[in-house]
Length: 252
Image (cartoon, rainbow, N blue to C red; front, side):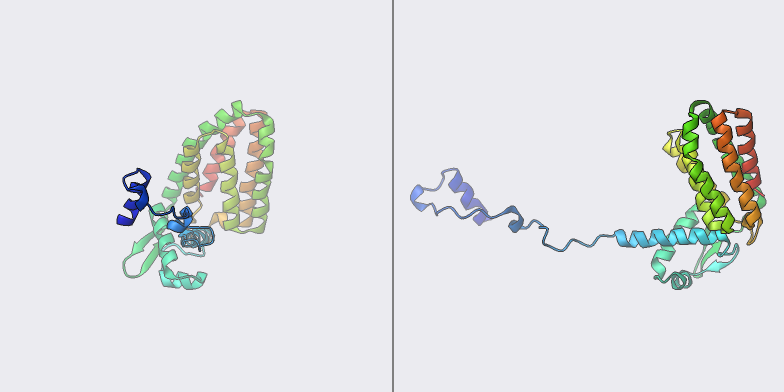
């Protein structure tokens, strides 16, 4: 502290001129303790979050495809070995899935994939319909036809994914299409809520159930193209019918 005080006294004239020491060369700010670009950057926690995010995506895909079987219990270390990572990011991802209702914690064992009922699936379809049908009817009245044409590549992508018979790939393209449609409403909260409900509705009741079959995926995807045509034509009756039937089909 004394060394810091002396230059200040000299600057304000409190030390006689004869006693003043010659001015010392100015020390760059970086040398006095600040980080410089040549120093190694501090470790960033992004890597761990990135791994957890990748594992979360992989687990969600495994849930949709039926690879993670409803009713079965899976341990963090076991899933970690499957994905080539430690148990920690797996447990963190599973905790997120537990919050979403996809799995439940089994103390000292791991996580059990939730067994869902047909009633639950029907309830999700009803809620989705209550949210999305009015929004799409409003969009049909206000959005120009050219904007709907811009979404055709996304609708066609669902058909391409359906043709592979890969349920997880179809689920991703399906949600991407619905997000794009709803985003035209300009309500980010609406899109987030609807997407969460959509994701939950994609978890299968049992391995190999209806939406796992290629023909049913193709039929589901075809409704996206028909919906865009009805929206562009501002045919409200057809829009309401298609969206309602689309959700009704999703609960089987």
